[in-house]
Length: 168
Image (cartoon, rainbow, N blue to C red; front, side, top):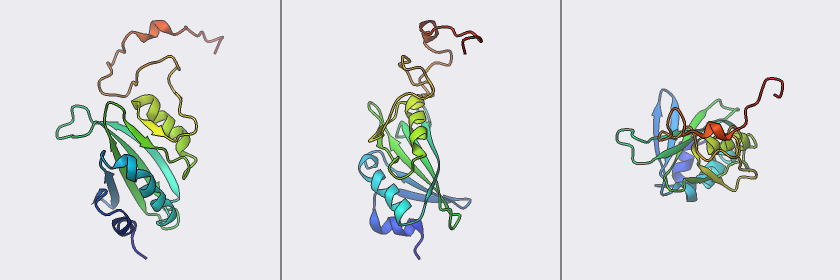
């Protein structure tokens, strides 16, 4: 049985780069190919390679990182529960409209994780069944985990009503 990276190499040649560090396999999908390739690549990893568990979906902002050519990344942590194999898929995206395909169709648990990344970083997941804010108020216009968001905010707090302990 071929490994997951060997399977991807035959089905998606040249669509990504790979690396292995401390037994962690990593696949990086560049920003110019991610919107077109990511959905099919993750579908192959689930259906063909047996990565049946999505452990985490995390966002990263690479603003001001040395040698970074892309602004955002979304990292998918996958596990094959039969073999115990783990794989990390990093999909890159850029401004002005960072967007990646949703994987809720493969893993239902991606629903809330993608909403969190959308809320905190502003990365849109196309095809998501209910993409709306999950942590911040609906009226909040910014994305607070972006590196260009000020630590003390932009003065938005005066727009939100104060809730007392008895009201919560």
